[in-house]
Length: 347
Length: 144
Ligand SMILES: [Zn+2]
Image (cartoon, rainbow over all chains, first blue to last red; front, side, top):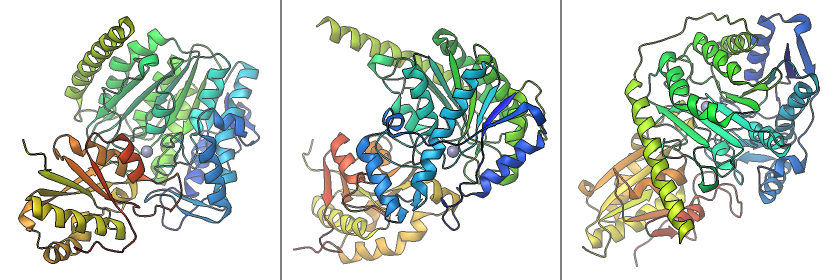
């Protein structure tokens, strides 16, 4: 059973010529319809995230400022990111959708969640909009679960590093953030030595890979480097920041993934959930409409246990050697920082 | 080791404040015989639109160099993916190895008085090397 939010197209949050556009959600809805789920599709109503729910991850001054900026008509926030008059209410709905979907999953104790929203969220910082993102949707839901005593894994396969999510949970031992992304690439963060703050060492796992990386290498990075950390963390919930801009047809970056690769990753992610009703997939990036539609379909078919994709998985791309370097860099940073922390505590 | 900077990084996004900062850095760099590295942070849309800052801003920079008698042989570009603040923070390290970073007070699309988009303030707060913020009171720095 798939539990999703009502999928509006987010019309009103749009800027002529900008790739983060309402058509993206239409493509996502088509991908969902391709699955023909019938009674197995449950749609929950939209609701806005409350101020208190947003304050778990964003600073009040930023929320006030963003709201006022939109109310005055909006404009460009930075060279990539825009907001309009309608962006503030739409962003609050996007941030609330994950909360509604997770509530329904918890109530049923069954099914898989799919949070289809825009603007995306994983670049949004506590005090700043960035990289097309205004509010950090996945972080709002992760923080709500965490405050209810859950241990939350956030798995991010968007081609860009989710610097906002990393920053929000940097020092939080109850949230494990794992990201595989192209590097170097915007936003510039996400190197293996970023492993979390002193209170949450080893709760950040960054898996940078070079341009051209194929599905086999991405899957190996997740399984070989992050797998043991995830096992030890033992999450009670799994949230996926599912960006599809790593698809080979996407104009925003240079990974060489196919829809079949996303199906493979989704099968792996589904296996990490400790029980039924503990997995939710959040839309992040993805800017080629056909690739987005097919990748959403492939991902959802896989999390529902019956993977099917219009494209075969890919292999043979570069980046295998990077996986070993990532393991070594993480291990040496952990040793170094742990020694520093112990020395400080002793003195 | 000289206490004067040998390599000056200048944040350059083509905005009027960046031009002002670049002019200040050229005037100062000439006197110190320093190298100047024009640093451009490539954002999501820069990449999407395949914009090359060297092609976009090359003429502006050449004109500035002429006006401030700065030898263009001592000038280079560093284009890196990322947001302006994180790219400028990394200028202290390889491959730029800057020992001074110069920015305008407001970048492209940054709004006066807003928390969102205040690269220069964040940079000044977090930089490991000295930061010069060239004010926007004049549209371009003029040598005294
Ligand atoms: Zn992305």
